[in-house]
Length: 246
Image (cartoon, rainbow, N blue to C red; front, top):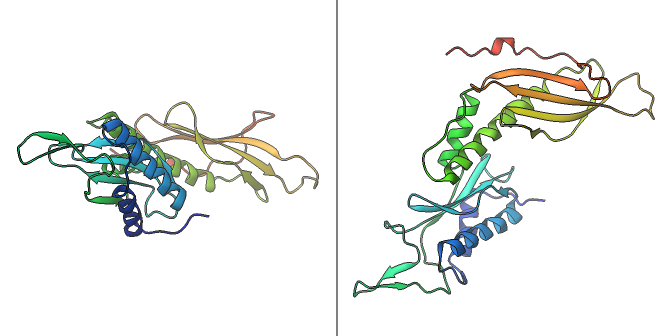
């Protein structure tokens, strides 16, 4: 059971972890692992999953987290500021010569928890607006966060289509999780139908539920197929009115 937690409490937990004993964090690679490990601890505590390993983004280090009901938004993350030069591990002495920072503890710097990264938020918003996915500038992690946000919104749209799909009067639906296949435009779910006329010991009827999007981000088709026969099942709910005017 995930503990309910707000962003301020989560930031305090992360701050304590980051400003404690960091071990050997004397390189970008080891610090990435250090922050990613902290993100995994946070996920163990409050739910969610790490989307990407920690990486430098402009003047912060950032690790993205896909949250659950414990977090205030679909995407969040942990970020940690670095100095203006982007150098986390080498500090100048009074003489101006650079020396290695104390490797037994990470430098004490501001820590925060964001509700959703800028890149994930952009992708999420574009998908909700029916726009095609774009390629954000920056490090590969920026594009990964953007696409994660975009796909999350598309999954939500596909889930909404599943919930209003009419499988027929009196039909009880047992369903499995929605997942992606092919590319980000195609979402499929397995469902098991129980018809009112079925005997109590009868097997459930397996169907696959499909939601497809056009390349421009708008809906293409929504349908369900019975696995054994290949027949269309149920009635597609009204999507014809959803034509997007550009």
